[in-house]
Length: 164
Image (tube, rainbow, N blue to C red; front, side):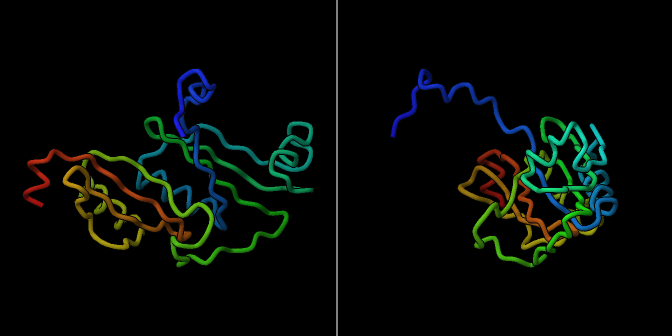
């Protein structure tokens, strides 16, 4: 399939944010703020009456109640949700990335080793040390305190790749 600029897809501007449902908003919020230096953009407590029921509608959950925080660093935004109703079903924090559904999201960094050290100190667990791919990038997967998988990615020069 060939996609041309005149077929309407050019109207997509990019990714706005990643949304993550968590069991402990305060702890997870601290992790993302400290580990990635994210800033809080917005905080809200919501229920079925918030915004005239729009949260209930967009979430597709009758009687939805909880809290949400939107964080930003650079152009990357992460929205964290903690639901008080309905009672959430906790995800397996060690679920494999091969399970169907969104398996991870990726954050591009400029110094992957420095970020790995910072994230490990903040409580992240890593699948492996950063690896060189195709001589052009370094990457690794890590898990936040809730078990969500994040890829750290760094573009590298070909000369550096030969030394790695």
